[in-house]
Image (tube, rainbow, N blue to C red; front, side, top):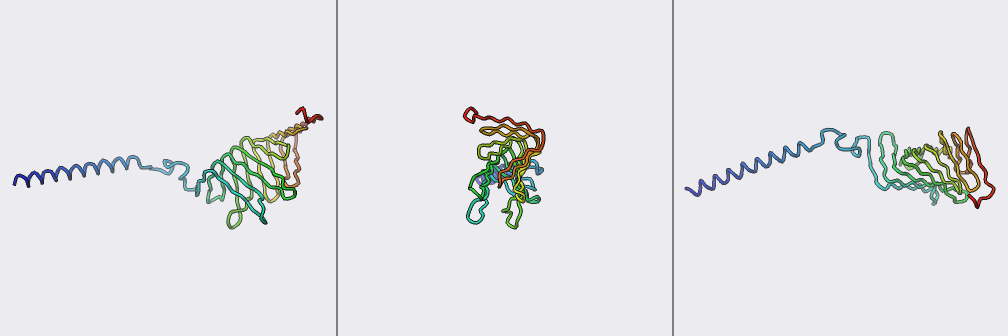
Length: 198
């Protein structure tokens, strides 16, 4: 009889202990649970459909690469069909002679179109934007590439440095295919006759 009471008392103590542990665990989990969407962080915001690290995308046409973009990371927004990339680097492969135009910046926004969202419509870069075209290097704070016109535009101050020329101006249009650069206003040019000294 004594053993039966001891066993019963021991079972009651174990049951009370388990209930107490369960209560404490549940209270701890409830306290740590995120109460709002913002508590989850930017990666889980409802408008962000995908977050991709080491982003890389290539567009092929008739068996050859037309453009390629890489970025440190990217977030795809379902509603706007827009991809926001950090530290993007884009390369355009010119059809005529196979030369390349390189464009980079701190942040970029790609707007895609087409059924599979594989067609680039526009790319807007902001923050330390650099365009490298042969021996010319163009620098500005914001630039937009429009695929329909094959044109890179920059509304702000643009500086161009080349082997034999330095140019500065406000606003720019660069036709990617024919590689024509036009500065819109307040243009200042310095020509150097001896390329070896530059």
